[in-house]
Length: 210
Image (cartoon, rainbow, N blue to C red; front, top):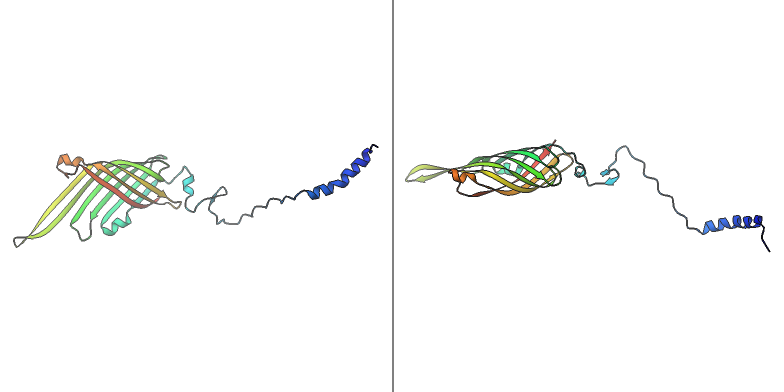
């Protein structure tokens, strides 16, 4: 016996609701929250980013940076540094430091110019810094000798090329921190300066970029 097409169609229509009910229901996607007047989430294009670290994801940066060592100022080492980023990976830096140590006869002056090479981006991450340094330290000692006051002035001068390695942290507000350590060759040894063939150097600097 052959079923007519109309009967087949009627059976299909009758069974369709039952088949649909047997299928698991899929919940519709939740609607995104309505944006507020001011978002309190630190993000870039919807991706959460730690507060203060947005600048790590951009090629652009604040090119002028001034720094000091606040800890050094407490003990009598007054240093200041100014840098300018000439490219995405290179900056030019000039430094001046005055020495007037507390409760010490030691005074002096240090000048240096350098060009830090940043492996990631200027003012961000590891860097290699090459430059030239000149430093003169004076020690003014006073002592008693044979019943009279006497004194002795010692001057220690070093100058020459130096290379340092360090790390630079930069935050979104422009505040930044840099640490570095290294050594240099003392060319003053041949000119009557310090007898040391090499000198060590390093710094800890906190600053602001704009």
